[in-house]
Image: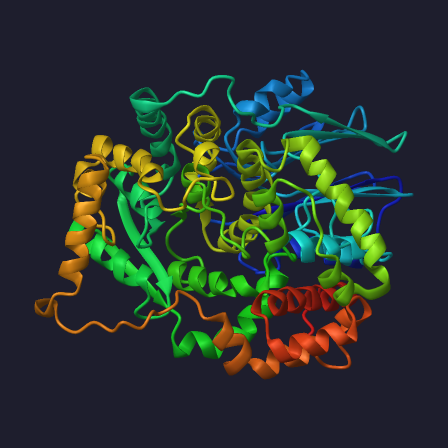
Length: 605
């Protein structure tokens, strides 16, 4: 993703230090960079050359300097002049309707006031750090690692990362470097060196009256029909993610008439590749397969560290497949200026929240029980003497989540956690990696579609897997079946595994009979021999514990591992024996971050 860096201070910073700071918003070397200065202050922005929304990402007038990072929907050009006018007139309500993933910085040279704006959910992260010389703002935490007096590593970040899978508050892995909250404006005064944070929109909340039945389904058709086309505007050729499931199919089915190529990645023979290929052939859509084959496994060690490095620590090692996939898909940024993704749609509309990747085992237990609990034996064995302060910190964060989103047994909390925590953290890393090469758009994060999720019963509000609902039940498949039947009937008739959208709409009896029929057909001898062996989409156990075991062991099990300063040797020894992939991946990611912080966010490999 494009980025920016801002420094507002009284004393200028050294040119060599400034170059290092600016470098962090273009680590991939895929971006153009523009910069300007005003007195002792510095401004720089980076962006892809081929973006769907045109216009300047940095503008300067006699009074203002403004920067824009990210993407907006419904605009042909970046509306920076319009943004400045609304900031100047204190019309903060303007940003409630500014649709997209973005961060904004605007400096009023006359007043000496800096304004920094986060998007509605802070999907595009932006961070700030105050010193005795002024304020540093950046879209990349790595920037602050290049400061001459860089902040220290923050152990509380590590605790949140281990317990939740990511920080759930405003903290980062650097002390006193904070992430700006969602839907917020930071206002910094150069003379007083004081800042305030204002919210321009409250959190999304469950509607007082949820609509249901055909009324809800027709409302969803109206929202998707109006909002979806705008996400495909701005490019002649577009890539669209497609799996064997619902979400990619829904996006393709509702797409306007464009030159679209569906793509799927995975280990050869996995269900996603097979199912997506069948869908693409039946619907006569161009399809590209990106295979995690021998070429991939050979390149994986480099992708592992590069993924953490290029994402400024947003993305963990176990998503290194994304770096490989987006490089291949776009030919390192030379094709597909827009990529459409269905990530998070299964959470919002069908209540899925994969454990332990998206929701940690601890949080899954808390959501299912509705009670705050910490596995004392497990965490004390890992953290030793630090356990009590770890527990205090985690309990504080859990109470904050409860205050923000309600009780943990509430499906509204589950939906809000998915949108404000999982989507902005877990999928934030994917957005960062993808946007090194293309503009990634996620239509389900459109504000009207989010409001739809909070306003109808056919969403995570009814289908949360942490509630009494049974995951995969026919009821959670009705909404997307209805969208397909009304907006793209040909897709409603394409089989999907052992079901078909138009059959789902005929009711449970027809649904069960068709599933039985498909099961018989799939085992028919006339269909030829099919292996019963399940082929995984990704095989991290093989990649970490077999093919690249030496790489992983040198990272976290060596005597030089930095993680040993935070985790007990006895726990590491046990992990080295049981080879739990979830915690190996976490500690290996933390180790790479620790080494990058130590090295001023420069490659150590």
